[in-house]
Image 1 (cartoon, each protein chain N blue to C red):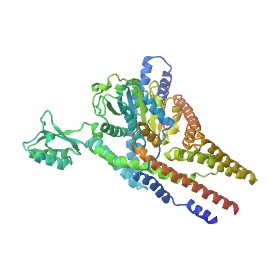
Image 2 (cartoon, one colour; image 1 turned 120 degrees about the horizontal axis):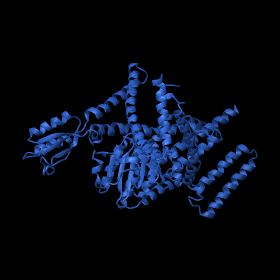
Image 3 (tube, chains in turn green, yellow; image 1 turned 135 degrees about the horizontal axis):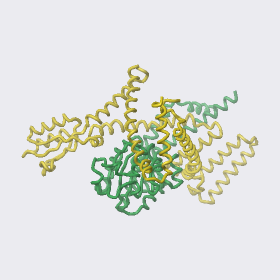
Image 4 (cartoon, rainbow over the protein chains, first blue to last red; image 1 turned 180 degrees about the horizontal axis):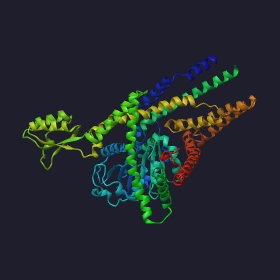
Length: 280
Length: 342
């Protein structure tokens, strides 16, 4: 028994570089050799899906890309999933893309490139990339009061007045649904606080951000939430198109298991040490 | 004194009060000010703040380099990176296209030159309808005006009429193949992703060292953390709720052993618990997700939606009250840190 305890104690003071190596392997191996794990859509993800599903035909949907490349693996599958759901149904929905983050513009361009490969879309008829505007929550406030004052041209410098699908769009109130792919400030919270109260709003966030957004989901101000990479994977399952989030779930699963094993090991070592110190 | 203190305090107090109380006044002009003008003022002031921020960054990092303080090499990289982005963004543009408006009778040498220079795989069919009204744009931009000019000169020597078309300012930062986009795709994106990915390693190392069941609160945090971590991922839905029930029985036994000296009571609890779970399982047919309260995904959802949201709400209300108090301090001129007072 003492031998086993000594081994646990040794493992309890393991060098952190070894921990890094094990975590690295636990994440890397499932990425290289994908494992198919069952994805069960949770209530929050289902709520987002149902909310988008229930919007009327020919709706105008605003998608805000409020994230950058660092959180791309988590948020990008969500924005892609929402676009796919809108376009899969072939119900004449139109997609308007804005960005509160400067690097969100690149994410939006990339997402639209991907979507354009999958669907036959007409720029300015099916979608428009309005682009980035600086000002954080002031942009949302401005969009709510007068969208055309904030966006006089789109991301390709085409005048808003010359874009057919912008006809009748003067403020955020003119949209039928808003979705924010958010990785922090400005993002989901700002859309809730400064966005219109009459337009259904939903969001996809990083796992870190979920806690501060959840109260707004319970209050009904947000129609569900896609929470981190698991939320993205759940949404991919709901839309029926597996992607990077689904393949990332195996890596995240094994990563979490390894972390939990380390926590258990650390605690065992802690209790053994405590007991021995009490003895002497 | 009057100019440096009284007037700024008056301006802040007046506009703070005006913007706050304006919400309660039914007047179109006041509403327009709050909704439009104040927002645009914020944008303008924020734009100037970017200049201040950039100058401050340069000043601090330059001082660090000049004084050779520890880590000055990183400051040097920061300055060079700043200048690189600044120069491309404001002066170089980094995206110049070449448009061909007429081609010679034998276009093959031209096509070879275009393909060699741009790594495209064009053929003569691309140039069938090319003329002054309908020029052909080579969709690979040149980084500099001079390199595009050189290419136009090379084309001219083959009898091709072409011209350099710079990408409009503003659009140049998002032009695919442009220098700014290249920087974003090949430097900024991998660096950002790397920084964020490192979190996994730090979380693992930190939780290994810090997540210790030292007392009741720490144990609660530890258990909640483990349930969230495992319940959020698909592996969690593979763990039967019956396994969790057995673990719960044993866990309660461990807790009892610290509270009750009589080992027969502990043994009795564990035996009763294990038997109870087994009989219940046999009765119910061992469904993996029943009883729901022991199914990890459902348990983590409950933790997320009930105690977690309660805590988050408390924090939010606290922050809200703090914002109100701070705002009132600004309006009444009690908070003066923005003019340098402590």
